[in-house]
Image 1 (tube, one colour):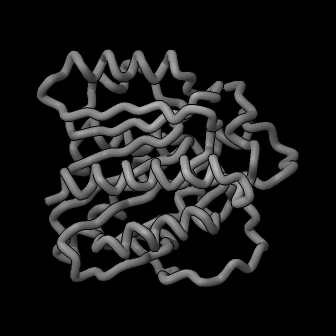
Image 2: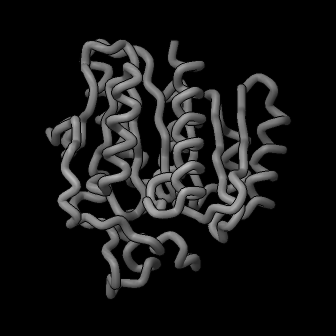
Length: 240
């Protein structure tokens, strides 16, 4: 369970950024950031990294997806206990209370709550920790499309079991899912022609870049925007 990258570059939760288009409400038993209209026939579940659902850039991305016509839900699967900068608990200790397997179980009632609104097409995107949650959902077709961004805890065997269209967006500089591992994911998916798959490695960026980029770094911002467009395009394609 090594890999400090999971916890590098934490978001600033006290920035008072404002400007959020959505709101927080209970859904499926979890506090969730909700953006977009529940009248949409299409929904996207965004599953956070270890820093949780309050991360401003994650919520900004939720608003961007909602603006494209989706009902977007970002649940607090970390139950009010995200990783914080200089957390005294080692990641190995924290993860025992916040395993992605628990996130997978927690996602089920949230998906049912989304369906109860009459929404029939649901996609999910997972970031780092959240990618493992999403790949589990993709194995049992709880969702219709999946996107993994700089995944953590994901193994090649997971790819063998995926049942829905899946896109994997990796980083060139990533010890959690290095390009060599992402290529193995791609090979496993290529052996399953019945499952549509798209795999891309973004050059010059590090683990977490899609939601933890530095606003002053033009290359990082552009790469993050590129990953957002790829994610959105995948959902547009498969949640018709």
